[in-house]
Length: 189
Image 1 (cartoon, helix red, strand yellow):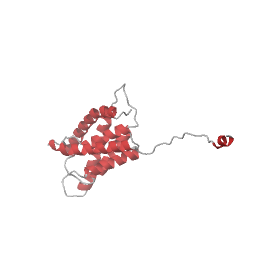
Image 2: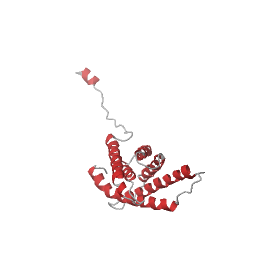
Image 3: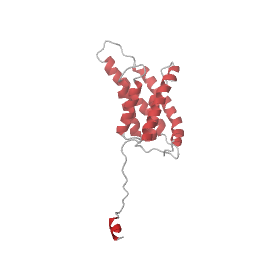
Image 4: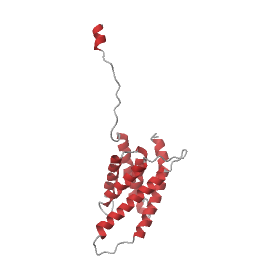
């Protein structure tokens, strides 16, 4: 009996800090980006004006709002969004940079504590500014690549500004509408 008592060890509960995203977070990002790609393909083609929603940007903004990743994880989300954009016609490879910047700007907003009662303006404001960051990065890279030293008359920036601001407004409305129901459905704080 005494030997048994001597053999008993004191048990210690150790809590390990998790690193990275959980499987459910990765799945959520994947599903939202896939939904964004499908919506961009089918719904985006219905708009003939320059101002149309960019569902891929809206969905990565929504996923970052819900899972609140660290910067390196947000960078991966942005690069994945840029990779998905490669399947659509347009300018290849520029989306890698623009979506990376947009995702990092969105992640930066997760560290700003702005809340008024039960309403938080973060979804609208952060999506709007992240879409602007993505759009301005896209235009800057496009101008550097296509118009630097070329004997081509560049498209006036005013046209792009209207498209970028219009897209940012539409994306911010989409994210604000979807944020609360999705957050409640996933039981996230």
